[in-house]
Length: 317
Image (cartoon, rainbow, N blue to C red; front, side):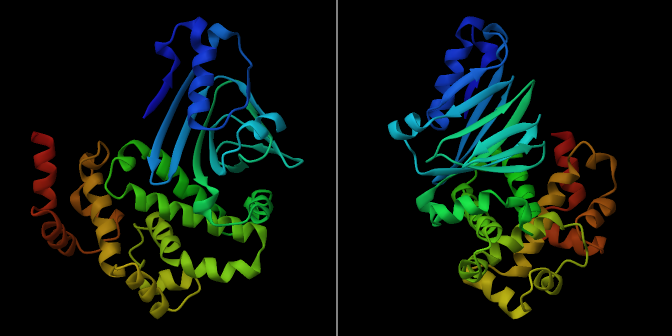
């Protein structure tokens, strides 16, 4: 959902429109724009994913200051894990100062004061989670927030969040949006427990989030023809039997899920501008199918037509 596009707002109204949109999507704070009022630019979106949401901001330079007074007035029990997509963010909370380069994560706790800013043109994508849904005490959240990059899960969660926010418009409209939101919460929880070094919680969280972590990992390696139960189990330090059980507990067949993901990615690639210039065989190999005949057979079973028929339908349609 588009909250704000200042291109459609009169220059003299942009500052007030920015504040109204931000207050709607996040929590009250003081907003200081670093450019003249008539040069303020911003686009903001908010998409629901069950009880969580994705809030995106692309804007000219500004500073957010959430003071103790703001917290006393309204303190939503929410944490926001954000990826900086453009520009360099500067963040301060609980006495820690951090520079957040493009492509890196930061976590803010909206129940406490904080400051955040960027200069020039910047962008941020935040996954906002209610504390109740996250299921972690504030001391674990805050300890983890200060050491996110120390966790071996950091890259996996960052890449997942980037893909989620890049496709938020389409994904939030899908029937599985709430389930996707819940899976993302699982990953955020695992990241925070890992980064906080809470060994007393780590075992339980690893068990609870195994299937979710495997799905996120597999999504990044679908083109690897060697990707299968054995390699997935080894990458997550569990037995193949335990891996099968984790998917069975979710009511899913691991092999069927994996081939379904590869087929969906290949189907989209076949009719993409780049994919239209590649052979069907090359696309199949790029998505983990080393046998073109096997790919065609599974594609027909899944979609009722061959890959070439699907491509022809798209081109002629």
